[in-house]
Image (tube, rainbow, N blue to C red):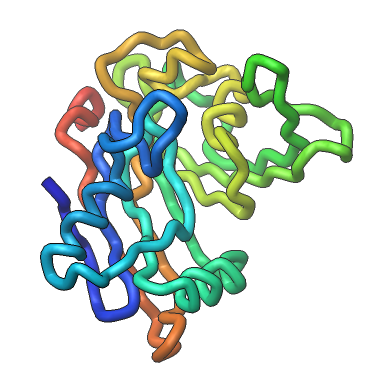
Length: 210
């Protein structure tokens, strides 16, 4: 079921659950957020369309924007560097440094694993983090990404030596869910220029750190 956070005649913002693809891949065509939104909009009008603006990983939950026309998609993507996206993540262990900025160049192996490099031929990735709370052997952090690279947050938390709980790809920290949630989104409306600020609560499975 779709959790719609914001909608007007130009765009729609939804809270994506974990374990759902944003768009289809070779193995899965229909169990995607894109497909669910398309069905929802076509029930209103069979001529309605939906366009991808950005994505979230399969295991990542949180706010994601879809456009209702190609023009709106292009406008949002053109201004994407001014969009603010903040995440909450639970890391394994206690992160000693309470805040910092990670800047590396990301590259990808033939097996599609992303890794940090000093090679400027890679894609520049910049991640800001701030510790919100310590509990037991976990650390809750707020993350602000200055760039939006594939698996950026997950790789950078691994680089800190504190991978995200549930991130079996980059941390082998087993959990039913990966504890990474895109909780805050701020952007200028592509038509009205109104400042849109949206925020969601953390999923219930984040309760390991109250």
